[in-house]
Length: 79
Image (cartoon, one colour):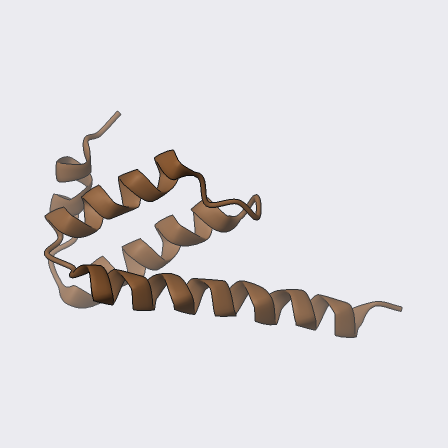
């Protein structure tokens, strides 16, 4: 597998970095639990990308809000 440094180095622009972190965090929450090991990996990758802890927090909050909205949409679609 790739290291956090290798993974972070693939993404050059800020847009690509944020998109990658949104996806990584989304994968972490896909089973409803963002484990300590998943969070540790995301923190390492974000650090290597020069994304601050405050920025990472904002990205994680967006992901949690997105998952909440998807859950609400699924409730609305129930028959």
